[in-house]
Length: 398
Image 1 (cartoon, helix red, strand yellow):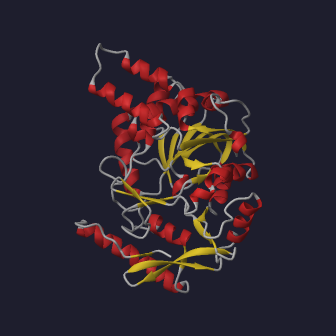
Image 2 (cartoon, helix red, strand yellow):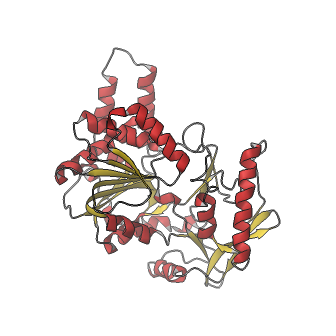
Image 3 (cartoon, helix red, strand yellow):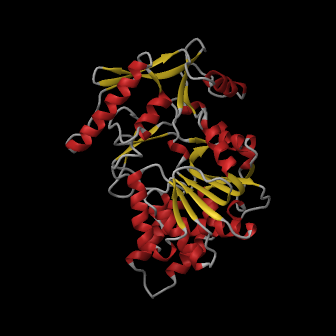
């Protein structure tokens, strides 16, 4: 199995390097206390969310050109403006309500959504943000205060899911950061779990008897569907997805959840050619596959099994309201019209116009985000067809 050293970037900021080493020491200590090795999901959880040290709760810049990756809201305001149209439709069907955004990043999506809803005179009663990172909360406050100072009384930050929430729940690129377990099929056909153990100054992956509850049964369920059976095949299982969606469903009285992320339906996720899984890391706008370098300084993600998300939603009492690609979702909501409206201003094409045009292409082109990202709608006590899912319905794949 893979062996990796601590791998600090050459020329890394000494403060950042010290931060990374402190997180590594914390993970090593927990591994020793757990018999010498950790299930991968616990390693991933600590790397991303260890208090004060994990990637998402420490102070390093993550989003945009100065961070590690760029999300759709940072690429173009068109993403948020289209999403605002879907939110407006839901709020109209409910006769009002709130919007709850999970993991609001730098705040761009919230600002653009509120732009679109304000222009349509359809503001939510409250715009709620559930954000675990203190540094990100401050960035969001600064941006929203600058963009929407008149809405300060409607924008609230939460530490827990609100009870009795009605409206729209938006989670853009949140599911991919839920910690995952990793498994491998041994040469003899047995199911094994991939664990992480310290080795010198670095880390070693080891294949062992499954330690995590439910992992064996989850892989056997894949086998029953003819998936992930070949000796040597390795991939991920997300044990936290079901409880996470159940918690969201318990918080939602009535409304629509929009889960947007890169991922596949189950049959596509566990195709034979994906025999090394989908784990991916992002560091300074470089994507790579080594989760054991730059601890606390890089993002760790895995693609989303949207079939599992849909199934978890049904178990939690939600209806699958739609499933489609990001491109079809945005186009159905009028991306072309919004872009044309932007481009029909002053004669000639400005630099800003070109940015909008290029941003639109990144959002919908198959070679960019258009096909890789999917949108899953889960509804509670709200049965109707939504515009965003009207152009292409992929629910049959789930």
